[in-house]
Length: 552
Image (cartoon, rainbow, N blue to C red; front, side, top):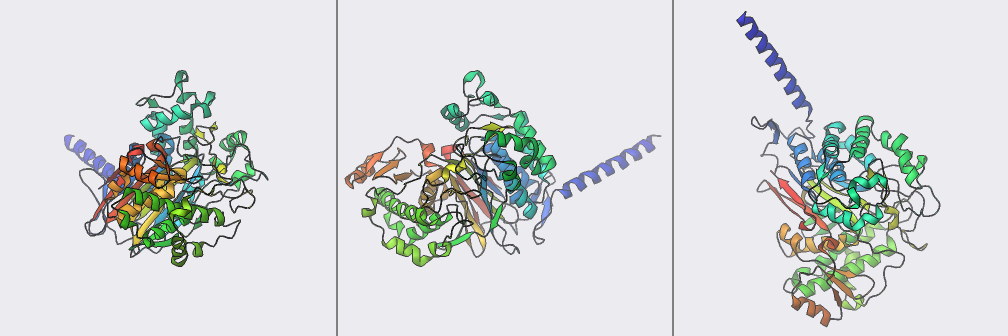
């Protein structure tokens, strides 16, 4: 009798082991057969074969979201899988910055030897069918559809598995970060209403370290997880969006993701891949190529020279963008010409401090802080993904429905009928967001991007110039003091940590200096770098928003 029980127990154990192995193996479908995977017996996790991979890495604006991305990668998901999970997680952990009420851009660089070319997925908000600009400035949200489309092309784990971490975070609650507490304290007047009382118990912003539970958001995401994007673009959720905005049922049903090729420039030994118009890629490629042509490394000994020269570059690229760049589905944008070496060298030849006399460049545009979130992911096969998601301002429009905030992205249109960026139904407004990848020999090497509105392209130029031209380690380049010139006048905003000598030098050159802006004003950079020779991944995460990068 005892032998029979033992035999039965052995059979049960063998069957259970077989089921567990089946579940484990179903979690991973390698995108390239030459990359082998093995199961770590101690952790029960998949690891990359170090002979074919530099490892895995994630850099985001939030440690909890970074943990979600790393967990997906450790379980065999690829970089796109992790990017989807992180996108939904950041909408829970930092609802002031991004979420399903907004949109974004994802740049996917497949691993070396992959049959696919690098691709840009633009799932930014579009103008509704209203003939004139809606007062709400709310555009048709694209994030949910964007995640679905990129998952169809690259996903290996089920959408349910990828959304589960964010749903759990919303149900169980996340710890309120110092960043989120600050945003709630500053923007409470914009998000008033009974539905948002969970953020303001007793009328006060949730203190840092308290638990934020978002049950309505968990229900919404569970619905999307179970029924797909139709759950968002039709039915109850869509009705809630329409009630809070000028967006119609047809606007939501007709929303489409734009998949296209990245624009490509060069910067020293790298190919620079960035999103095409109407995103900020043209400005960034022009800025980097101008920095190289003007030999920005020669300013290394003088902070004042570095600040003045990068200000010159930004003024020139901003003016050029304002004149030429809009949604290419509506206006003719000469993108190839704008990013050509000949053209950017011509722009650079016209750069001088005389151009910084305060010429008004911003007619019809608002200078807002802007708010986004950026992250970079590298997987076990060498795929790199660089993503910027946004709801525009902090908490977007402030309108809240079904657990999420709606964007105010239409505020990025230019108030001028002479601009390629004027409002039109169905059009995508200009955006400075620039998720970027620098590659060598078709291998993705540097993934980088930033949150920060109008500061995105000039600060990325400062950081990449320090890293590539001045040869600073990426974390030091990110930590360096930042500067940004007011485009309306000869005034420079300094982060407030510059030496007195630098301030005096700039003042002697005719600039007024403003050191009152907080570090948050100067944005948040996230970056990962792959060193193929040493088989390692390292990075830099901005302390200005308590970012976090990890690799293994």
